[in-house]
Every structure is written in C-alpha cells, then in structure tokens.
Image (cartoon, protein in one colour):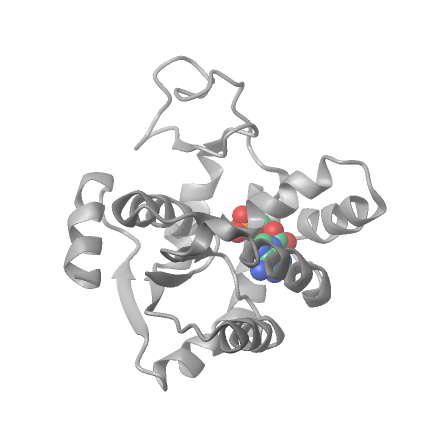
Length: 213
Ligand code: AMP
C-alpha cells in the first residue's frame, strides 16, 4: 500500500498517516518530523532548514527531495509506505514520480484532508507535540493524561514555533500556492480520495477503512 497524504497544516494529516500506517503495518514517512530532526543536529543544513520552517516557508525542494530519496531507498518499504507531507510542490511531485518509476512502483491513493482555514487556526493554537516520539496532542480533544508530558514516552510536550497564528496563516497561503495544484495532477490519475478533516477522533479509523478498502 503506497499512499500520499496531502492537506493544509493542522488538518490531521499526521494523525491519519499514523492510523493508516498501523492499519497496514507500513512505515510512515513524515518530512516535517525528518526536517525537525535535521534542525536539532546543528549542521549547516539544519540551520538553513530551521530558518525556512520558522518562517512557515517550504524548505527548498532539492534538500527535501534528497532526504526523501534516501529514505525511500531503505529496505523496510517492501509492503509500502505512507508519505505524510510530501510531495508539497510540483518539483517534489516530479521527483517522486521519477523515484517510483525507476523502482517500477505506483501510488495506490492520494488522500486529501479537507478542512476550513478557521478550524485550522483554532486547532493549531491548542496543538502540542512530543519532540521525542512525534506524538500529537490537542489540549481539548486529545489532552495528554499527565500534565504536559507525552503519554507514550513521558517527554515534555511543546508548542511548535510554527504553530503561532501569524506563521500558520502564512503556511496556509503557501499550501494554496504550492501544494494545492498537486490535487489536480493526481485527480487526473484517478488517485484522489477526499476525507473530512473535521471528523471526531473516534470516527477517523472507520472512515479510512471505508475509503481504502
Ligand atoms: P509539517 O509538520 O508537515 O506541517 O511541516 C512543518 C514544516 O516543515 C513546513 O512548514 C515546512 O517548512 C517544512 N516541510 C515539511 N515537509 C516539507 C516538504 N515536503 N517540502 C518542504 N518543506 C517541508
């Protein structure tokens, strides 16, 4: 099962990616997490990536394409993968096509999470995430059991600096400009499956199962 998940920031892409990954026992490749990891390493690449991310801009295509190409070469992807947050631009979609073509593989689905901008803005202001294992919480709809620490690994939760309102608004503009055009591209290939980003947590697995078969 090879799936791409597209959607604006805060639409619940990551949550769905994890559920589908568990459902089909395939790895989830989350470029946001991979890039955040790079930013903690103190390398020149990390400093450059952090600068783009803090401003809510896309990290340059050549950097992200390289990171993803390396990851897709690893041997744990025989059963497939879920790409969460990649591709996000035409150049990235071209790079992905090339990698898959060379490997003789095809995508099965491109999932688009549909949600209103205002819902995203209120949602992201309450989002907290675990910098260690990547688990995502929401202070109202999915609060951590113990105050401000990750249920899974006990690490202290943080609010990402790019979840502040002005940066979120800019990330939405970037999504409309750079990523949304990909929907048309994949629609022409019959791959698009739209899901409702506003569903309550407990209704998500059933919706995904219905959609993916
Ligand atoms: P996310 O966690 O998916 O919302 O991504 C957080 C930030 O990481 C984005 O705002 C971008 O700066 C960067 N990023 C993640 N994925 C990509 C990508 N495929 N291409 C470029 N930048 C990315």
